[in-house]
Length: 360
Image (cartoon, rainbow, N blue to C red; front, side, top):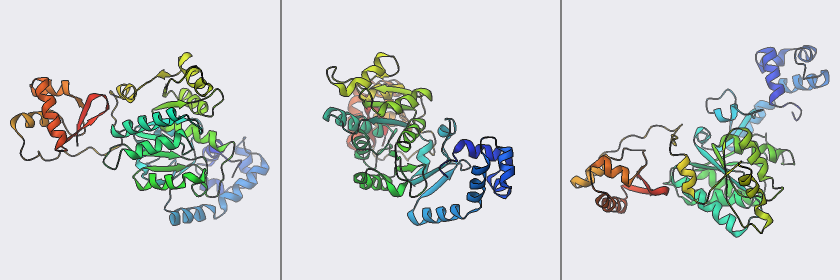
């Protein structure tokens, strides 16, 4: 129901204990107990609750391969429960467990400069390779470049990409990005909407989408935003939700980056120039939260004594610098550098941004 959102549903649940009980109540009692629901709307609400809409919606979801999460689902992300007016439902195609894992939003204009598109892809690629999921809004321009960069990290990268859309999943806009949405889901990522089937996007749904992009993410990177860019709406949500905010610098003589520079100048966003600037801030976080703990693989066959010492100094699932490994293994740094190259060539460890390495 267009006029019944999260606040009114909460009001119904508080008044009756559940929506099922509210459905069995007389409309007059609903209006009496719920001060924010007048008599006319109470009639509509009770009628809707008694209808077969939910059953029909679930049937459509099953046919379309869509999973619907509600507040009551264990997979409903805590990050969204904490924001004002969290969505009643999340319609998901792909891997819903990603919702609870570490994400960075990459956002920007639909008509980016070549520089901005390249940087969106560059940052997304590095974040996905480092095990951080990349979240954006599936719009043209910077959003699409960010999704593409995360996909380019390949199936072996620990990071995926999440697309939060401002329409129903059967009305994805722009239509040209429908193939990208399908690719994201097939590649182990996730496409999410809060809207029921058939809902087209409008001037209200896309800003609402932006609040989910910011709410799901631990940080938001503004790649390119003009003075009145809708990207600044996402940045505002990130600030209001207490999330970290980053912005890329751009040319000072072009209006395309006025929004970026204002965020930096006002101290709202931290200037970043390379993916490592973000990764360093995430160094103290558990980037694998919400994932199953990795099992320790068997020690590779054929290691030399020094290679074994280096391998044992790098626990599974942990990132470490060569300097840290040299200290742990009791080996000189030049020797560790040479050993690491050899292990990389054998695909036993892999390099990460910021000079870190991890077991492959």
